[in-house]
Image 1 (cartoon, rainbow, N blue to C red):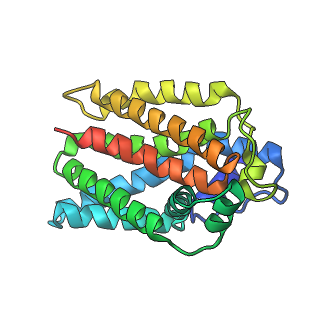
Image 2 (image 1 turned 45 degrees about the vertical axis):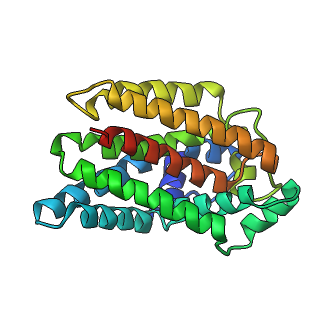
Length: 249
């Protein structure tokens, strides 16, 4: 269970003690267990969203508070990864220059614009889902889909962009089948996202998968491989795609 403990300690603020020693074997297992923290975070987000609306909080405000709760529950690491990836992709120069920009820690214009757009899209989608109580599974599915994206980004054949960091620990650790089987299994559950239109949830997953594949391919060419920031960006893009599709009337 070292992989699960590591996934929970890495990806949430839960007081779970990670394993004493973390090597590529344990890190690879943590990537496969990543959907479990996603399910916990998605459940907490859905409970907060619909609970606030039931108390009379306006849907958009409830959506923003739910997003804030998720950010706190993950230490904001996925949003940080999205911002750093946007800055890295937006700068000029060789891969070394892009990686240096990503490690800088500051938020450039590309990061700010990307965060505003993604958070705005997620908030709008959640606000719409909040007034459709039968679509609550979409919130869970989006959170799980975001963590399933790890499997594709860390597939075999994709190197690490740096010799150190999270990317170096997990790059190339996942068989191609992990991402594919995870997507198929989640698609079977996604039919519950919009009960009146069972095709809509799987369509959102298809869109999410396309975005993750495109992001992984582009960042591999631009940076030379995967980084921890790319994993965060993939999480946010996949979750956004599922939420937007499920919220569409």
